[in-house]
Image 1 (spheres, rainbow, N blue to C red):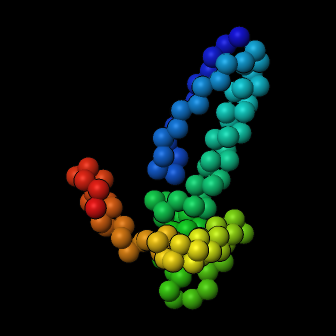
Image 2: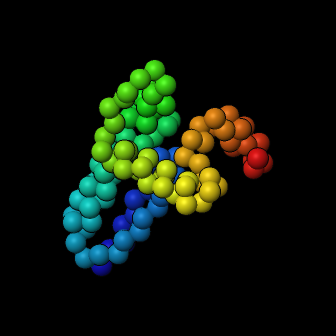
Length: 111
């Protein structure tokens, strides 16, 4: 048995995975598969990558229709449903508050 670890930061979140297994090669393949999937999702969902689908939507959506991947559309539809169900307590359009949260990250004080 061998303990293997994989850590990184994706979608502005740090993760640390620890696996104990007999087949080290299989675990390393699984780690690589997981990283590829995280990279794929980050290319769609990251607001910090200017070329992501979400960033393009934020940047261009007010000017007209923007084609987005089906996964992003599904997330946005689900977000609208949650917003309605919570009477607006959950607001997917938080982007206007981004500067406030960016300042909070620097000062370590939650707004």
